[in-house]
Image 1: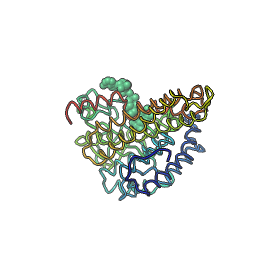
Image 2 (image 1 turned 90 degrees about the vertical axis):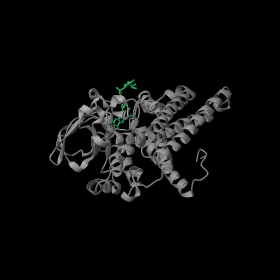
Image 3 (image 1 turned 30 degrees about the horizontal axis):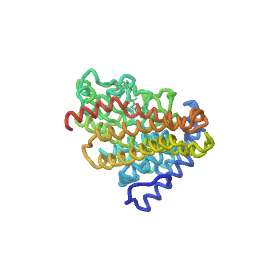
Image 4 (image 1 turned 60 degrees about the vertical axis):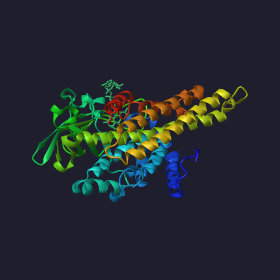
Length: 410
Ligand SMILES: Cc1cc2nc3c(=O)[nH]c(=O)nc-3n(C[C@H](O)[C@H](O)[C@H](O)COP(=O)(O)OP(=O)(O)OC[C@H]3O[C@@H](n4cnc5c(N)ncnc54)[C@H](O)[C@@H]3O)c2cc1C
């Protein structure tokens, strides 16, 4: 491995699994995401796009089910193993990592509050899928509600004026859904199923919600165009519209009484994962810069022979290592703690995404003009890292949510 793992207790099997996933990330995910980055968003998901070949290869080796418990046919990995694999996949491509992550999200959530109907019709087939036939997404953001949706257990979450606009009402044995989820829904353009975060009781504000698994081939579902954006361009995103969509009652995982608690677990899990993901991004930037500085000659010797360059590389190395061990500790703690201490997951997400952006910025600087050119890998990594400061909650707002927990002593 290009880095030394400070955990002396890793087994040979864990190291082998990491090596296999690292090689897939290096040989398949990285080159494909660099190629897809240059395309228009429509072309990324076109029938003949390399996206589909690579996504299917990922399903074949089980990258879509890393988070799912073994009893359902999932990866059954420990939190430490999940972290190691997520770091490797993200090192290769944060775009594909997010795509595999959200693909898994509805099945992962369903496995947390399982009922026989969803286990048999959805979770088991998802885990058996080797051809990317079942793709999930996480539909929470709305055109008029971004940060509002990610503030469980804060004062603003219960304000009626903050209630979401995508609504569900119960009619007999079916939920009827109306409204729109934002263009930011990752895999929103290609998903077959969505975990939709809905408002059931608007008087309770955002807290009056529910989470429903919605098959996206139902009558009344339609999609927007793939979003055109700055970074993570191999990750497709797009709006989903619901017009009187009828879903069986069993598909509603939680209603108002436990919505806030499951949202809190969602946020804690997603932010803990983001810590692992952006450790991988930070490491990719550091390694690219290190290699370049060994090759590029200035002042009659390789850049790495200059003292200031070494100083900068050391600072980048230090940040990558800090990301890995903080985000690992948070993932191991919060994946084993119910209810989770979400402020730790938020701290991990905010720290690692900021560190990744800082390391990416230094990597561009060390690569000089080449770092700005479309031929360099760091140019893409810099844009990818920038998106991380907003993705899964804007860092500023997440800090306010975590801050409220600190004040409340929760
Ligand atoms: C790459 C990427 C992938 C994403 N994937 C998904 C996905 O899979 N599913 C999904 O549903 N969404 C997804 N999102 C959406 C993402 O979660 C939202 O963009 C994020 O929550 C911020 O919401 P917003 O963009 O509406 O910004 P806003 O909420 O409008 O915030 C704008 C600015 O105002 C600040 N702000 C907001 N409220 C307050 C406040 N009360 N006090 C002080 N400052 C405040 C914020 O910090 C931010 O700087 C994704 C976003 C990105 C960039």
